[in-house]
Length: 281
Image (cartoon, rainbow, N blue to C red):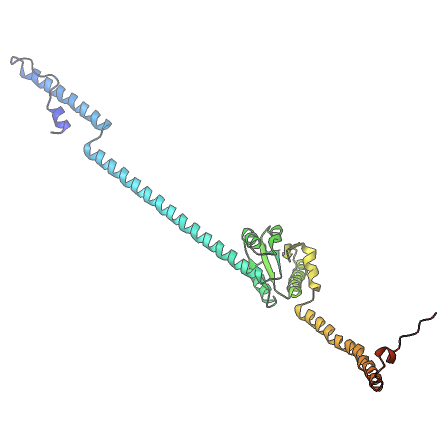
């Protein structure tokens, strides 16, 4: 039997004798029943009915399971995101290293404030062996530290950089930047809000270059020009050498002729044919 049934079946004031009147018994049972109901109500309020307690436990267990599942899902998503981010960073560093190994010069340009259209137009004006790539400073710093000759790029890793990579034709790449800078300066005269690019620094042959040093590379001869200069020097060398060597056969011929003339005289020596110059006393 349930606790409610037990409590309601016990009278608070049972009859003391058989002589008790019907009215007294009725009052007694009513008072007992009322007291029992009060006790049962208090018990339910404090402990709760079995069905309510079970429902509460079930609800709590379900909520805990749902919360735990949600936390596990968030944790899993975080791991996946971190793994993808780490993989993307490793791929970017590998790409930067490969580009640095093929470059003669790298420098950073602050691209903050420029539109996508401007950057795309700038890329189209670059020489064939030049490249512009936007990369985080930390990734560029890591790539530079792993490629010989580019450790000094760390000093340029500040601000929002679009990295310029120049191949063999360094001057052409620098001139492309200077033309872009000049275009922006002219536009800024008409519209003061126009962004003018600035350089954060660069690196070449293991040396850090500031803005002025980078711009001075516009006068650096290209590979083709250097080869042409060397070829011109080599071409002129045989002419000068021929002039010097031209007279050697004549002198040798004269000497051979004299030796032939003195061949009949076996007592002669070379010194007799080519006497030494007399020294003044």
